[in-house]
Image (cartoon, rainbow, N blue to C red; front, side):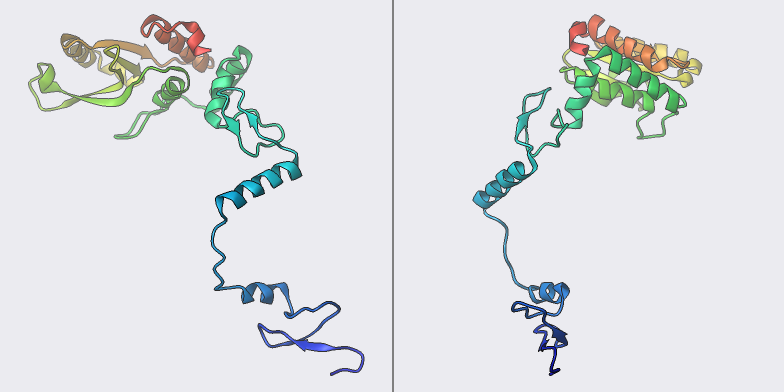
Length: 236
């Protein structure tokens, strides 16, 4: 012992340490934490979890409030948070024409156009249409539906792949890129075969130029209005 300082033994590492005050049994916070290893505290009970949530809301001043799009409650929202998810945020954005136009022009400035799809990989135009359909249209659709050529009167064992098939309407929505400029004859035979079994084929050419995303959205609105009969209000 030092006459001026009282030293104590850490119960975890065994080293001597100077205790400035209180009844400390460990030399550092690390040793204290190490002493707790192996102690199974178990998960909080549902009642305790709810008390913690209420305490955090009161402490941070962010009480539960409803999502402005779907009405679902947002648990522990951020101060400026208005929507419960990215999906609801996107739906709200498309209902405001000025934001939608700004967003589409921004996409045109950062995207370099059509990228030919590799096998099993979604192309950018297909992803653009899929997101619009998922966020805006309630009609069910199947992406990359397989139709055997033999089932539509073909003579080989190949398959046709439908970009977006709407079972309720019997519509095959096709988004054509530049590669279709060289396969018009094949597309005509394909479309005739599908029409023969009651499937209506609707094709849209992916636009070019700096306003291509604005034009693509106009195509989307036209498809929803003219072929799904949902009206422009459904697209925001």
